Image 1 (cartoon, helix red, strand yellow):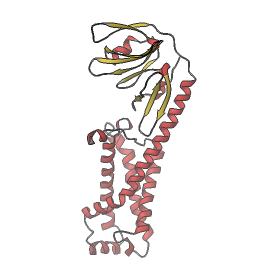
Image 2 (tube, one colour; image 1 turned 30 degrees about the horizontal axis):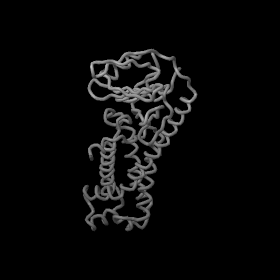
Image 3 (tube, rainbow, N blue to C red; image 1 turned 135 degrees about the vertical axis):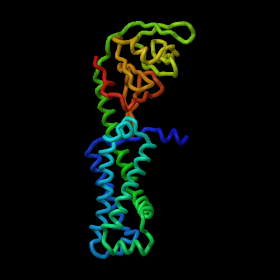
Image 4 (tube, rainbow, N blue to C red; image 1 turned 180 degrees about the horizontal axis):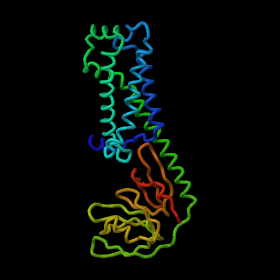
Length: 291
């Protein structure tokens, strides 16, 4: 149950502008929180408290920005928007907090005002473990901000993209009528379907797919002994079929609407009582018919 939840997609901010804005916002929250509540002996600093606290905010902002920008370049197979998950995001957050803790430790105990260092020693708040505790205690607030900002930005992006695609789809025309194809079922028999009637195709494990189509008698589906790749090869040049997900092929002529949330896009197709997911690795502009 937990493992499934950790593997769910999570939005990753790719825009450099958004990464910098989010980092500055997090640093600002840290600075504001420390100034407002003055925890961990900060209230002992009578003079220059703002600049002292601002350094902690700057550390948070710089560490977050550098990690958001550099990690995708250093370990692109792990940190990328196409396979970013809740689990990876949690690991990323803990990593950032540990790096900030180390930087805070170096600044707070060796570079900060001597008066503050004395306060830390008197209250037994010295040492890396103490700084990890203090950083995580304060860091919970910018972490919530980071997650909220990511969700909001991706939600707006996907909704805008879904709206644009839906408008493009509404203004496209259907492709040619296609042709009649023969598909073998898993019962040592075969059926004939006109490609223009097919709505979508779903992988059903192994070498089987389920084909959904609609004719004058209503909607139908049939289990076929074939892979998605073989199906695309069979219908090549006969219609407007595109693989939008590792488990789905859709007929672009049958798309009614594209909807988006913070994590993904989904397709509504005429005659289907379920929505088809769109993979984050899929070139989404290919959903628009070229006919």
